[in-house]
Length: 251
Image (cartoon, rainbow, N blue to C red; front, top):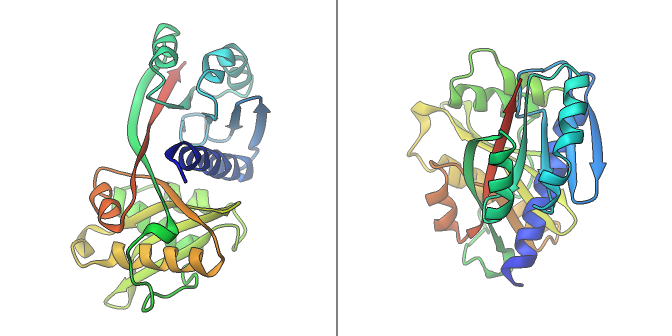
């Protein structure tokens, strides 16, 4: 499988997660256009994480900017954003000239499961964390005192996303979620509380996600890496596919 197909799966899975989270938030809804999906959440007007579009085709981002501005404005959203492939430099230049500002950039990574040289025979191949646990560990890991991620995930039905955890001293300390989308396992919300880092717990939850994907006969894994996580994913055999950039508009 070539990187172009892996990248397609990366972005399609990422868009599915974005619209799942935004569409299930309070009063949230989704708009679908050719090459672009967007979630609009009036109840979280200052959250570009929930109020965001994902450009499956980078060229669709500038093409739909005017409509996005109107739709987010009508919903009372003050901060919204667009996810786009940063390799599309002509597109990002257009976004910059449209008074969008880059808010974050992370590498999108992926791999073909059969090409990973990992022994998963001892990994737990089944979900063992609920959404509340995953959200709570993420909030602790990122210092969110308002429990924003726990509240976001609590809007979903259990089983919508597959959760994995590793414990330290009997309590959840490292977690991850997976969205099985077509033949791809899209991993997200990987986090470890500060005091539990460097104990191999994130590797443990990733091995569980991989084993579960293998059990369901999926063929690829994709994810958006953080600076902390990229080295782990490289060690597992994932490679960079696409710079994933978030371009924000504030009112």
